[in-house]
Length: 82
Image 1 (cartoon, rainbow, N blue to C red):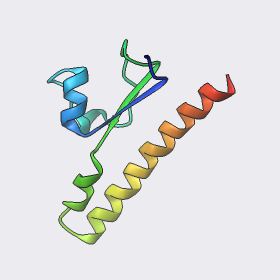
Image 2: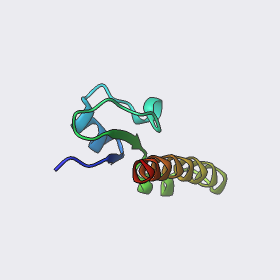
Image 3: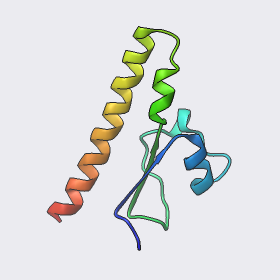
Image 4: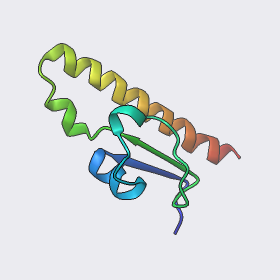
């Protein structure tokens, strides 16, 4: 089975698939070349948002996470339209 979109949530998942040098903090939301799926992308694990130091930081991190999810949704819709 080869999925159209592969989403790694967090560094552990991303590094296990893309290599130990992969950095979610530097590469989150970027398309990654992978033989595993047509589109591959990584973002933070949702639990990391809960560990933010304060409400403002949690809000900022949640907005960034939602933006990542929107990008993923656009990729999935692009495939359905094709």
